[in-house]
Image 1: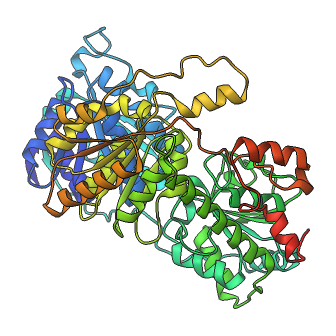
Image 2: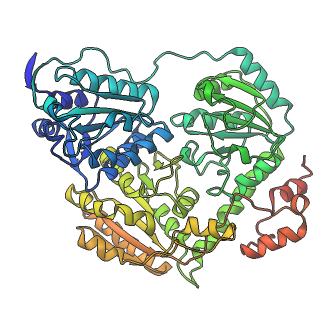
Image 3: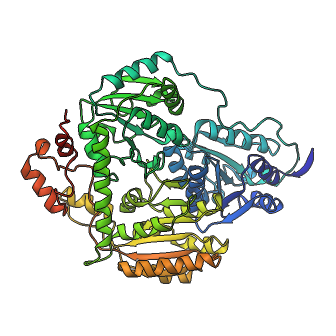
Length: 587
């Protein structure tokens, strides 16, 4: 045993779990935890953020990028409440994080003391594990249990620490039990489930669809093998972007407002969906009458979002491996080849949008340039809003790139913290963040943090002086446009003032010139954050939640009206139905 303050012992436990950095802001009620960080500064980096929310969001992004637990802290009262956005993001997207929450000394608890709050019930809804430490000696044990539960239940764990306890000297003995964070046994999938679902696949009339969620992250090779063996087009949920390489010919995008024409239209013609490792919240908008096989390791998620025809309670990767092991195959059909063609047509149309800057800069042009620069292990931190659409549609995920956004919680302000997390968690790659001007304004001061720690994140801001996503909702629901306009700011000058390097681009030539300058800075070993203020035109990204382009499904008048409103040439973008019919293949 070694004598040390409990605050240092706490940090020793974090180190034992492989935590190498932690975010937070000091405060009177958490000072001896910070003292512990000082005493252990050779082995764990303390990242001083400018807002606890940024630290909590960055911790969630750490977990999304790496699968390892992210850690942040806040002092009692306001420091604690500032953590909520990041914790709820982790809860909704099922990733492990730990929040260390300061509390006033025990002697002043329950006395209406300065910044005192009853913190345990505050975190009861968000936390998978929520404890207040009652003795100094138990602090290392509670931290260890909190981390175990965060991993086991895939969510946020909260430990509340009265300040006097972290200051006490204790006898610390390292925990000797193994730090088990995942199941190591091989799962055996019920053979009857394999036989039954294989029969359903064979019985389906050519349209077959895989809808892949975050439960398949890490199973890329198996998903690719399954898709190729059974000749099935693959759709993914937005948070699972990259679960199949974006340049794979069988990858056809996703469904919904952030999706693609190829994704929307595939669902209109599918007669069977394999719903794997996902709790996709918009499944209720899928067309009716499609048979659904749902595979999930959480029985609570089976049938939660949409009625299903066959349930397989199994790890999604194990299910794919069992299906592959059957040696069965399905032939390549017109269904697959026309879906591939439809996706190629969509990609070509996005490239045309990028090339046209006659009435202002298209965000697709920025994404197109970024795509030409990214490395094989780059990280993308993506904010909430229209920027999510441009990122999902334009960023390459064809090698070992990593993608993180606020999926189900969809909080604005996620981009910059996630960019910071990428630079810290995957330091051998280039970290990027992508934000709208609304989301970036919420967290902009933490460019200082990137500058302080020499994190050369490339932060791209799409500036159009409005909350574009909500603007479109108000237009679509015929409301008054109110509260969605934004006062402009020169984000390049803001970056310069906060210790970064700022650029502004307003047309395609400036995009080429500026990003070439950024390449030159990278070649020289730049260690300062970069901000690119991309002043874009105010056109909304094309909505893909509803794309009536097939006259046999929607009538010619509706097709013509939609195509005209969205500047779509039907000859260049024929519907999937038209492509299928041209092959003599239809439902």
